[in-house]
Amino acid sequence: MAEVLEAGPDGFDLSAELDATSISTTMKTCSACHEDKPQDAFSKKAWKARQVRRCVECTTADKPVTVKSKGGGAAAASPSPRVTPAKGKATPPRAAGGGDDTELPLDSPPFKAYERKHGTMAALHRSAEGGDGKAYAELGYIYAHGNGVVPDQETACKYWIAGAAIGDVECQGTLGARYCMGNGVPMDAAEGFRYYKMSADQGCVQGLNGMATCYENAEGVAQDLDEARRLLELALDKVHADPAAAGGAKRAKVYHDDIMTALARIDSRRRGGMGAAFAVTGERRDGTGFAEVMPQMPY
Image (tube, rainbow, N blue to C red; front, side):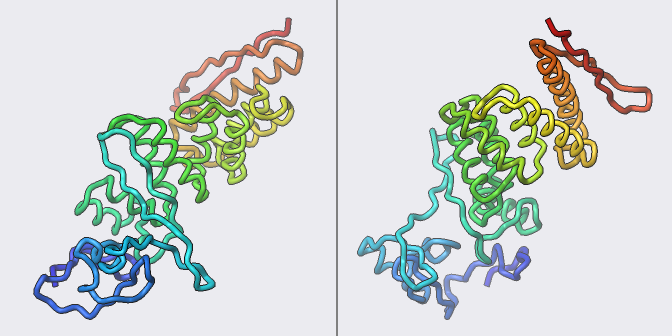
């Protein structure tokens, strides 16, 4: 056996591999016929696969990979395609339900060990396939900003869609903005509002702020200035109560200033004005920030 570098939280070895001369009695399940088979029934690559593998017999017969249902039946499925960095567009892996052999929480010791051995992108994919929404969010940002890969807004949004499907609030809030702007996905204000609401329902400031903007400007929903103001006040309370949850002190300050400006703009509209407003921001001597909003007078 090769030397164990580090083990995961459930005890599985992330780095040890079988010596070529050793005899293994370990059995693994074929993802096509769902039979437990020894190592010599698989190719070397299939045996090392952690999630989806086919035995030599099923591979030769081109038998499709299936997912075993609770009732014992099988439903067709395809293995998760891997992203090839910097080589055109790529399709992100599907959202997975997790499992002992796939879970790799982002920034955990097992994740860092896997990252050291296989690289950041491979570790993020592994984490995402294990059901970590934050990994999907990070992969989306990598493609959105072109960090080491060719920038690809469509691929970025595919990762966020996968993350949103498993409940990640950051992916949901980001998709709300993307659909409202039509960036990486077709413009669809109603879909943007839906994603904002998914995020807001979990108490996310980005989602609350986005929903308020939709209500203010009638984007994907009927205009309702009172509801917009209520959501902004709720978002502001959350920013003050927990700046870290809003993305840190700097991001919380940006949210604070934006929300104060939006509140003044909405109040101006409610008085019959056009809603124009601006905010004067700065820093006090004690280091705390402030924002004084100067609303437009109605005319």
